[in-house]
Length: 81
Image (cartoon, rainbow, N blue to C red; front, side, top):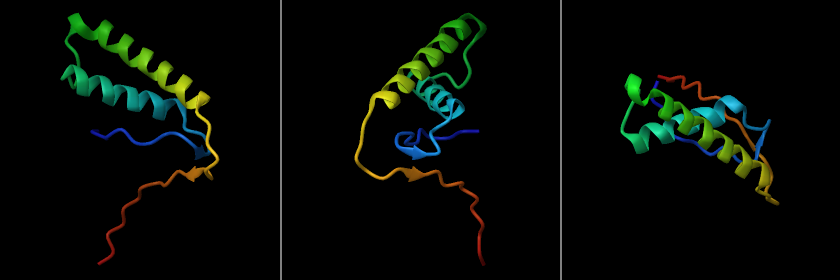
């Protein structure tokens, strides 16, 4: 499943850990050039994902805004013909 990184800040309900980790995974895949790492690189790859997820969560927790929260839109694309 190939998803691009999406905004996660200021949502109701709050963005989930899974969403933060999914964004971190996309980031690591993008910068490393690996869709899935080799065995030799697996540990570094997974550590990178975990560290970026933690940094992302810290950043989201410390951001402030006066804007109204966004609502998560569930993308159920129904093609109306």
